[in-house]
Length: 233
Ligand SMILES: Nc1nc2c(ncn2[C@@H]2O[C@H](COP(=O)(O)OP(=O)(O)OP(=O)(O)O)[C@@H](O)[C@H]2O)c(=O)[nH]1
Ligand SMILES: [Mg+2]
Image (tube, rainbow, N blue to C red; front, side, top):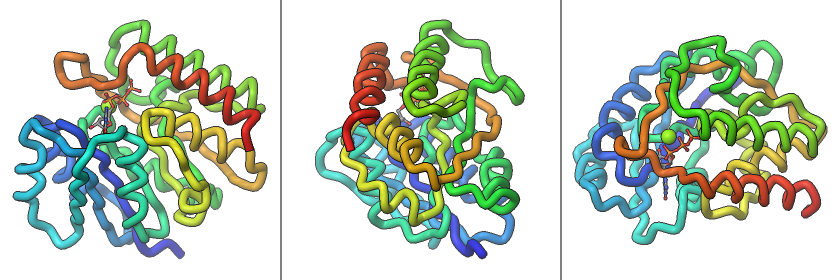
């Protein structure tokens, strides 16, 4: 029933990980699905572009943006080109592992899911034990989402999100920055016909000196946008 998986990799200054990330994606277990990998580079200046230019596989398409206006804009750029039946978001930093694809895809076949989130906070798989602030921020934004949208997510800010094509294409996403995450979660939560599943994943979190880009104030960006999307149509 599903023929093709599109893996979207929005990337920005990830020279240390992007090559391994793409290779791991190309070798991931995705059953009988065909694979297309759409990488959107958001005007990296650390050598990532040069690495991307050296990639050579017919399944890969690389888009180069001339300006950087945020991760959301970068995801939307990749999304325009995607035509798989299932569309998966993959960060280029290897905090998330393509070894989890099999688990992320399973609910589409077994439960006819429309959306699957990979949760970092169910503790059912490997989790490296890192700082408390990031953990509590994720718990709080998820709790607020559950409260406002009557849901039971354990992790709304996860980078692993998979969608049936028509679901994600019809969301009409407007956000350009990290606020794309609350926008997507709010919009799918508001639509009672959309079946959302979560599966546990492995997370190998990195630190700021390893290139982490999300900052503490994005916690407040998330809170603001979760509340906004609860009331905005
Ligand atoms: N800041 C930024 N990140 C981008 C952009 N485009 C793609 N990205 C990718 O988005 C990810 C940024 O997230 P990270 O800093 O790793 O943090 P995170 O994994 O989203 O955050 P946690 O929820 O704390 O794990 C990286 O993989 C970036 O390469 C962009 O334009 N700006
Ligand atoms: Mg990351």
